[in-house]
Image (cartoon, rainbow, N blue to C red; front, side):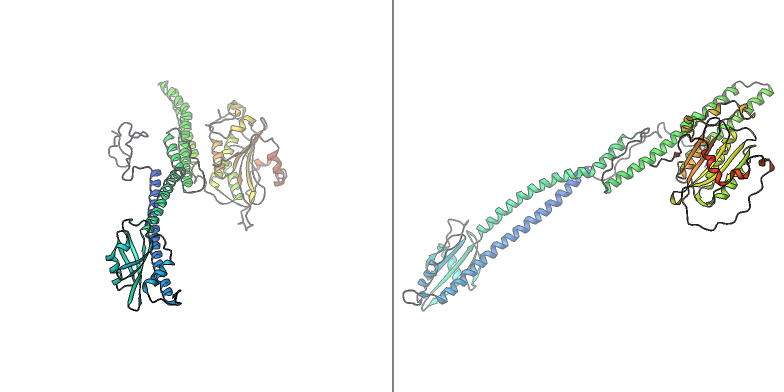
Length: 561
């Protein structure tokens, strides 16, 4: 029974297909509305607009009705004032004296008036209506104020000078002026019927209502279109998410504008970029591992199947199996390193003294092989980089140089600055005298599992220690380290005349600072003195060394997303 490594208990069983994408139960939405977001947006806009229009209609109607009532009151007051002025100044045209008859005064005044629609002016003396003005527009044609003797009597006896009464013709605003001349008395009654004004208000409000209704429908249509435009990126996100499969993560949401919805689309695309990168990294690791481990596994299986009881044959087989297992372990380690190179924390830059870094590299390279290691020049100053990763990359270049050169041959190492100011770069290089690489090989040599043609040369052409060649991951690691520094890995070579491999790393020039004193360079063994003289490798002479061979291919620059 399988056991869990952390608790020691039985490993939980998994139902068939439980871990497969899309095989688990779908999450059901909890709560919320089943109406689409587009309809909800349109609904809220229409509802808000409708409430605003209703409030507007109610307000307009109230203001118009108040205006009708105010106009009626002003008309009554105006008529009362006009009659009061006339009664105080009018004279009988026959006698040129003030009127002595109330009926004549009322008749004379009413003959000079033109009543408007809805206005009624009556002159009443005793029980007789002396004059009737006009009837109200929209009033009850069967109703005549002049015949409503009961109401007229009430108005004459009412102690108030004005008021409001409800009649068969609707609301009536009235005012009166009592007149006396000797023993005769009379009353001028002014009545304003407001039903006609109210009907005009209703007609106006009805027109406004239908106009508002049309505007509301137009607003709903515009809201539908605008909501569709706003939610289009959301639909694109849904469409892209629906089209994504476990093997295809290339679809992206088109981004338009700079609003919040565009930011959502950008964030979704960034998430897909991360998922695709993780998926590609995983698939690449699986493909690379299966590709490179297939051969040693086949070799191990074949020899184990043919193993016999002969001690010498068994020892040879076990030695071969051990070598293949070591190779497999190295391949897995290199693949894991390349996977780690995809992480943002793969490179951890820090200020590093370049001279100390180069001296340390020279000391470490001595253990790579029996070669004459010549440090041609050393760049001075402090540069921000990951010293451990750079050391790993340069040692890998040194190991490659050892692999393709015979014992005792020269391998040159150096570093130099190129450019000035913010554009300054640090070039670190390793030069060997091996068979070199062709132009076609140089264009792909930094890719995974790529070997130069020198890898297929017989071993005795270079050294008698056996067949060379690795998995073809070393230069890929070098390139990954250069990319992590936003730099480049490069090669210059001519077949049969050696190669120069190196790194080109950003090294912006900072303000000069005092550098700590360093111990003097240790004296090299006498064996190295047989190489080029110090004068021939002065710093001013090293630049031609890197340019003496034609450049093959271009530096492998890091692609920026």
